[in-house]
Length: 204
Image (cartoon, rainbow, N blue to C red):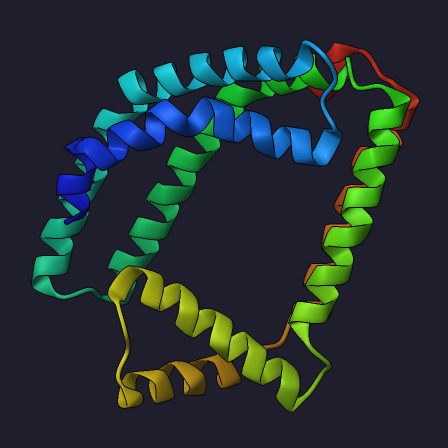
């Protein structure tokens, strides 16, 4: 199925709609002003064109190799390989985006920085609420998130499979507080840099 999707109309639709979708996301965070939305769409279109031409073949090879491994039964080393390979593909795209991101961030106005700060506050309130209070409530919410994400890929899990996921989540350390603290630290660092209005080179 994954191999088929890599070459079918679903992939084409995703690529064709990515530039306006990216512009919409950036607008939500920064409240884009006149001209900026078109600028973001143009840069996003160039990124998507590069990704479709240069990266999609690597994704296909990755999925083919994963299919071979899956046909033998997934072992821990296969999961580790897939994770590391997926992260490498992700990092390559981020590195390609950095110059465009730097060009955008140097044109952000103080009013847009203030808008971003308000958006961070709203997003953090939602993250805190969704994480739940420490103890049984948080564990239940963590388990539900894990199950929902798995089912996005696998379809519905049966009762025994859900129990297995719940047992695994319960055995994992709860790093919610650390994750939330790190999230806020990164947001505050970004806001500090934006308010300092550094040169383009500082973002690269």
